Image (tube, rainbow, N blue to C red; front, side, top):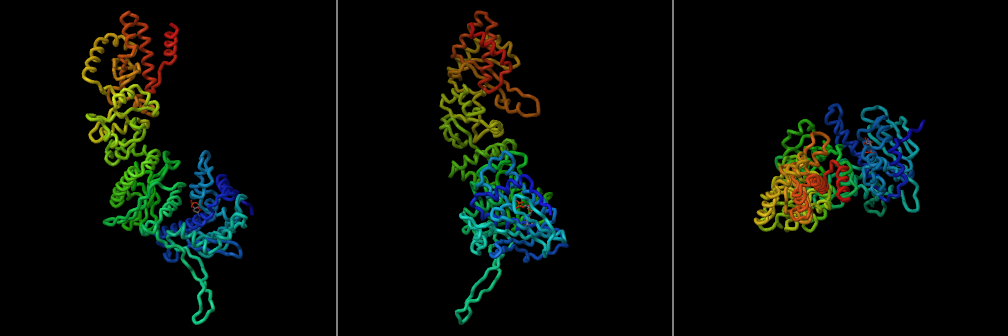
Length: 627
Ligand code: ADP
């Protein structure tokens, strides 16, 4: 019989499994039992809709059979089984979860210690076996097939005999080495422990024949009897009394079920009794999965009805801004036959979703309060999602989300909440100031920032492109409005300063008109300002659209280009102001134009905007330098 080759990605993973120095080999049992349980689920689920299919609920079981003589460990199930084609595609090609991991460029795959914690599934059998035999008979076929492989050199499939539907996975254990004893996986004691540890919540009995020795009545003679023992409690982790579940068990459950290699930051477990009763177990991951910000990412919670999984990702249970939450909901009030179509109008789902939103919010608030470090880690990965929540709801979700936001602040140079900012506000301050830019350093260098800071006001540094849009949608926080330090309405001067400036501007009216001649389309005005301390020039924006928003909107692939209405402000106390006046008074108008162009180019550069005519500007500067 011709040997077939594994698909390339499968082969890579297989090699790693076989040659793995990974110490956590024991997880193979969890993986195989989990597959067996899924296969029974599938059969059970099929029987719900296919009335011709008759199955007895209490006949469904998984078996573990250690055979010390032959050094094999067999795991059987009486689930849905696999056809010849399914054996070929399912075991010849690696399953999705694993293959994603092995796509080129995914650094995580390089870290061997992570592997066992992913859903590597069936292939983990090769961590303990040098040959794996699978006999399977599908519920849809009269014939059974045998799949066999010794690992990297490929696999064979042939017909075989097997009674009843289901699958038998026979592991031919590796020879013991100096450092690893594979025999241990044949010991009753080890098997029992592993099943307690990893598979206790599996909903079907995991049985094993065990020998019990009992003393005969009235004599010292012992008799051995072989009997079936069920090794798992079958109570799902979310239904066990809270006091009986350790944090480690929750973490293991999470990493196993949700394909993460890091334990979650927070675990939310609760139980609700009422018109719609349910249990829920939610996790807040410690980092974004690699596809989180891609369109492939699907949000949702697992939905169970009386312990039976009826939907893997019920997206109706989570709002988009909490799409990072993983977990499950189990409700006996939800019909097993609920369909995708009826989900949306389902009031039970709706009311569960509402209360989950509140729970998640509370948990995040608690984390913010009692574990700031963890919250900041969380926020780095998922904060943008919260801000989007406000932005895309046009501010309607402000009440839910505003106190979960963090912004970098000029105060102590660390993250702050809006509440903390407001608590620190100066007497008489009624505005929350912010500044935008590509990076913290760049913002810090903005001329307007310097002067506002100088006056003793705290400034939020916004570096995410969605930040300013978010604040605009919020309108205000706790009655305090937001203001960009580059907004032309910003005025922190005293009455006398204002008067003096007004006078200076009036006197320079003609000068500015002359200067603006060549910049009619670019800027809507030129003025003197005393908001700049050392810098000669800056741009401020007039109206709703700021310079930062102009930048963001113009990077969008569609739509017309927009332009913020800007004003060029010149530092009245900078020597350049006198120079400009001098040029104007001496009627050196050509030079005045050149100076103006250079100043405007500088102002744009400081704002992080492109200069449209760099060659011209560069030549102008050289001209002046050469004089
Ligand atoms: P995963 O379980 O993550 O999909 P696996 O590599 O463990 O990946 O399994 C690949 C596929 O093989 C499964 O999705 C399933 O369709 C099939 N399979 C594995 N074990 C069994 C089994 N005991 N009974 C039926 N099908 C199985």
